[in-house]
Image (cartoon, rainbow, N blue to C red; front, side):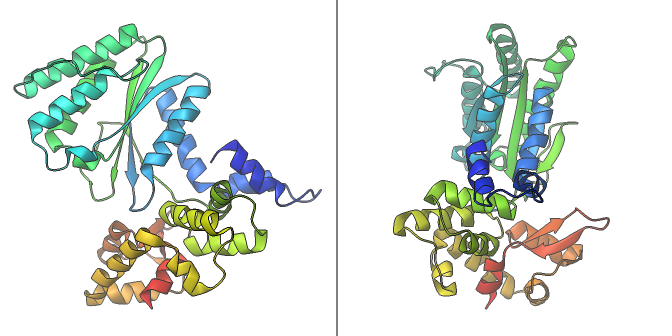
Amino acid sequence: MSRIARRIHRDSFGSTSHFDPEQHYLETALRGRTARKVRTHLRRMEPVVVRTPRWSAPTQFLEDLALDLAVGEPAIGCRTVGFRPLKGRTIGEAWQFTLHVLTQLGRRGWRAPTPTTVADRRGFRWALSELLEEAHRASPHRVALLAHGAEHLPVELIEDLTDSWTGYFERHPEGARCTLLLAGSLQAGWLSMGSGAHIDLADYGEAEAAAAIVGRAGPLPIFQLEQVARFTGGVPGLVDQVGRQAREVGHLPRRQEDLLGCLGSVGDQMRGAVQIVAAHDGLSGRLLELAPGEALRVVPELDDPLVMSGLARIDRGSNEPRVVLRAPAIAELIG
């Protein structure tokens, strides 16, 4: 969350000698905490895998992350890219696309594609190594490639990226100048970067969600804002839909049916996920158990499919992991 949005949230509380809203914000800034973890690894030039639940807005997360890394100390120049266009493409097309992305690493602007022909995995790995060495030598600062939609990459291409980056790190014990972040869907359980960190992308905390809505729509009544933020559960896709609606009409939805109506395409996708789960007796019963909003002991065979579908999340903050419905909005869709 940006410092401006944080200040908007803090100022809405007013001044008091007994309560520090900034401290409260930091304690409940779940998505901000995730960003800090990721930044720490990237500043150490360590590769990172970020697992992204449905409707978690990974593109915006990576763009904000790139800005924070560029203006922080030590500065890191980032190139963000999405691999979704590779869905259904051949391995050869995936090789060419990936190599073209790496030619942009550490360079200003967007260069015209460099003609490169790769016939097999051996040639692809050689080209990767050459591009990493070029970025290491030529870039005036440390650089990072931040890629989302990594679930659309062929498994063998991920293996080649991992091996190439590992070889690059080994060749430069004095300190690497290039690193990589791959963000991919929770369903892509195979997504890995060797010994690189695996981090789950968290939803907004309640205070973060309220600040995000204000950042999109402008000042709003604090009590109503808190209610709407709580209703979204901090799911970024829902927060964005509510913020857009509030900006267009000049106020937040006041009635429950209006709240559901403003959820847009994300609400439709959630409704579809609920309908799919309802066709499975065991999962349907588990979803009804979670509907009141209480955190329950994890039952992997029932909860894992709900987490993968985006309807539930695992809370690991206590000694024993607990499962909870991802947002009160989902309870309303259950009916």
